[in-house]
Image (cartoon, rainbow, N blue to C red; front, side, top):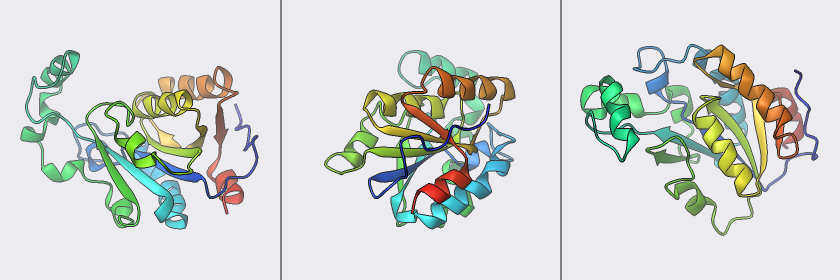
Length: 202
């Protein structure tokens, strides 16, 4: 299905770019490689380069040791023991190098779960600001991007997903989530191309 465009009009000074988990963890050689990362990275670089001071990068930080974490996260890190901090090069949690160069002025927000909202970090960053619109890029479409988008919707933000700047390691669920964003959340989510974002955010 084609993107619907910026149905609520151009983006302005109350918008930020929220880039989800574009880290070396998910790139080639990481424990959770996402093949599509390399394809969407140039678009994310272009958007960040236009508005570095309006960009927040999230980073997913794994548990330190296998079996650590509250509740089912402990089981998760038994399954993914090879991805815990004690078993990987610590540099893998860093942003992709082509994005890290924008920090500062871009900001970095670390999180230990899928959502950037659950631990309060993103709410704290935005508290007291005039931000009312979020442009979402990054990965994965059906995991951390989904958690990010649902949190933004719940908080009433205008939520814009950049369709050619998000990715997943599973094509089938990526496609299913793109349909979900455009249909079930059509009143609260705008699905647009990077070209439309660049034309609509001056």
